[in-house]
Length: 167
Length: 283
Image 1 (cartoon, rainbow over the protein chains, first blue to last red):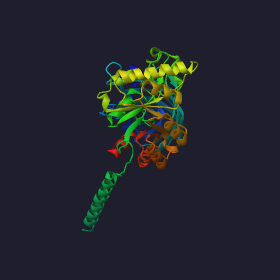
Image 2 (cartoon, one colour; image 1 turned 90 degrees about the vertical axis):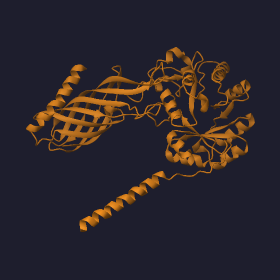
Image 3 (spheres, rainbow over the protein chains, first blue to last red; image 1 turned 135 degrees about the vertical axis):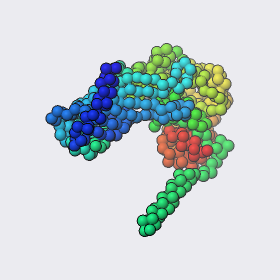
């Protein structure tokens, strides 16, 4: 997990350098994913870090929540953060595959004190799907199958649809 | 100068629109409530925050958030484990919504208490016993609770099962001194009759398939009231129940509009899936 996070952070760091070299290719994208690895939905930023002919490698960082307040009604949001590394093949119509982790910070009940308690967990996932995105940027559409191994224990079939913009 | 005039005009328009939006969002409906409950409608959550919440119904999180939003109380689905522990849980089989399987009455509490709900993703909300719940509600007697008793005797003798079940209910009510704060609803006349025999002060509700059958049973058994889906009862029928000295609780209220429509029917209690909105409307 630490290795995965390190690679991901380095990827995000290196992207700023990479963009300066090729301004004509739109490397950033933001999109809203309905369902997907965020659970019910998430807002995501993605950055292309490598392009070799029709193959593009990118990294994703997202965020979402279930509840902004805990059961005492105090502001204490659940946080769900999808991170992943993805590969796309194609020009406008792309096959997309990604490997990622979701880091969840969910406020639940402490079984001893019955007070709100934030629990942190990691859940690996895989995404396979179709992605519409032109090299010059603009509208993005994604549809994918994204199974999740929740708590590294339970395999769950899942999927998502995304709409966004590349720039 | 022309540009300046246009900007000023736009600015005034913006102010006007803002005022309009604020006025519309602040306007409140007025309801003339006439019922047996002191002409007030008690706002109850449906299993806590309701089926539209990200918290599974009947979890501690859902029930407590409902109470903390200022509701008068909450409805809970009640089931009894093999070792006669009352738990707040809706489904017949645990596999429908948790990571374990089996009928509630076929497992002991020790086998259930470590289970967790499987939805939503990344969460692990626990099943709670009534004892755990009531032990941790601060100012418990400020709230009312409706027990929706799910009766699934499985292979057990129904008479023995019902006797154990009603004993468990009596024990929990007595332990927390909740006779005045609990309403008990069931579809089973036999079950309600047993409870009636245990304590004539219990506030018992029949949960019928139609208003007419509910009225007949509640009148014949001298029950406290009728719990009924809002889809199959109208304002006139609720008035008839009131004329027969029967309280009425309605459920199946799953939107803000349904809250408003439900209030207009003049029930005594509303079990809502949109409890915060209901509390705001009745405030």
